[in-house]
Image 1 (cartoon, one colour):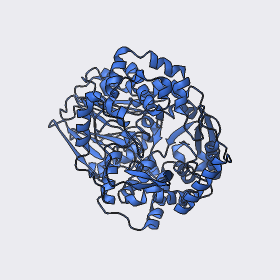
Image 2: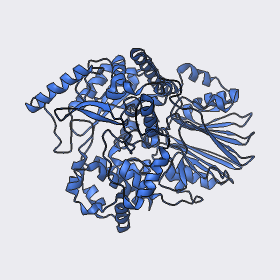
Image 3: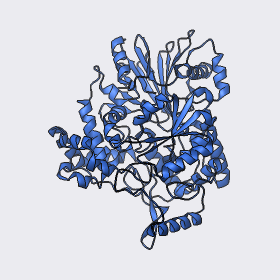
Image 4: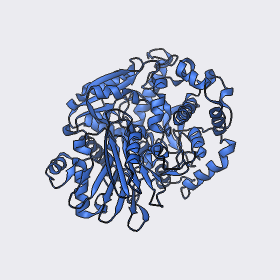
Amino acid sequence: MAGLYAIIGEQNSDRIVKAAERLKFFPNEQIDIFSERHISIAWVSQDPPLLFAPAYHPETGVRIFTSGRVAWDEPDWQRAEKMSHLKGGLSNRLILDRYLQGDISAIERHNGSAIVLVWNPRSQRLHCLSDHFGGHPLFLYSPEKVEGCVISTFADAIASDAEVRTTPDHVSMAEFLKEWQATPPHTYYNEIKYAGAAKHLCWDLANTTYSESEYWKPHQDGYFDNLQDTVNLLADTLSNAIRIRTLPRLGKTATFISGGMDSRLLVFAAADPSTMVGVNLYDVPNRESGLSQKLCESAGVEYIGFARDKDYYPRWMKKGVSVSGAMWSLEDNHFIGTHELLQQIGVSTVLSACSADMLFKGEILDKEFVKLFGKSLPFFRYKSQRVESFLPYPEYQSPPFPPAFKAQMKQRFANYFEGVPTRLRSDSDRLKVENKRIRPLCYVPASSGQTMYRAFAYDDFFADRAIADLYSRIPAKWKINRLLWGKVVAKICGQDILDANYGWRPGASTIEKFLVFSRDWFRRRLGEISTVGNQGLATDGSWPNLGWYIQNSPTLKQTWEEAPLEDRQLLAELWGSDPWQISLNQWAKSPNDFFRFMTLLNYWDMRD
């Protein structure tokens, strides 16, 4: 899908048409525009319109627009086909039917990572619902003013509106360089803010008022205390969430498969494996691609190997920032280059398991490696002190604050984490920190980010309402070292195919993991484990050696050397020192930082 754009104010057909075009990133996207006095809404999507187009009730005039997907089981879809009194896509007919039966409260906890807009002309109210985890992006311009308010799934689309006035938020850009993300609700524009996770927003045009409420909060009902019961419950819930998102009526489904534990869930739990393909990205065939193919074959799913060429990431930089709005680093721009392939093979649904790290594996909890004789083991233990960071990955060492923005950045961080514990004495303390770091998910680096929702007919099974309820009750002690997650994956997928990241079976005990780690350490020392090595572009995993690009890509070199003086000066101010004083060979040793530089340089060039 691509997104939504809504304007409250005098009807202006030309304005809403132009807004819709700004949400269109690929030729196969469709546009549906509704406009009447004081309200205009554009829907742009790659989703099949028969299933997901806006819906309308002729008798009351109520309309439903959805960006993203709300999931339903097959009996629901069949019921929607019989709703002849409603017009439009089947999914939105079901939402509309629930709204007409029970008002807005009946649809607040919608089942998916989707933004739902409800326009009721009788009450003159526009309702907007975000998803539980804030995975689907949603931004607001002047919401309290009502007249002149703009609502959209893309901040840049708002900023490019000729009727909107914005100024750049350089603090957010500095945060992106330091923390890999801005502090919610801020964007790269001072006047445009993120709306919030699990929010119900309401504009009453008759009384010119705006209100908002939070319809769901996690960790309100205590925590589970039986590990095996929770394994069974989470496995069943995940399987069902994947099943209803891979029903045959939804067409051919693609997932990006790797040899790790997460993506294999999708191929083993698919409703119909014959309608799914697993796409594995690599530079050269390696152990990871071999395990990915083995997983697909074991699950009865078609495997497609996608070989990246030597200019893959640099070539897709411009498109990457145009779709992400540069709120997602180009180092994670893995999938846009597969768009043409997925269109050619007739894919109508794209799924990934990117959110597993944040929701169930404790990736951004405060922890440190367990060490033995000074060497880090592949195990973690929790820290007792919160790190003053969003912690994009464990033991992240963030660069210093840039002097020009230090005070503002620290104040924003303090405001955002106000009331969140700094001393971590309990599961409750740790989960409060985790929840603050990962909600909204659309801000979290290295996950699906905002790009997938704009580039593909994308769905996130982790956004399932039942999964949100389980997330809310899982203690932190079961997240560290993938204790719970490994057992869940083993239950759904079996233990025959090893985890490519570590070499052990899903659900392996701590003793087994230690023995595998020790064995492979000795085998590597003896040269008994063949590897691709990281001297060139290719690695032994799914992702490339980004440092190789920095040293060898003419595209990166040209962008770096030809950056305008004003962009160089701004980047130096945002970073805290002049990055051009360091050679590209040196930056190749810190490729993540360099790719964030390239993200902003390409973004500024595109926005000029």
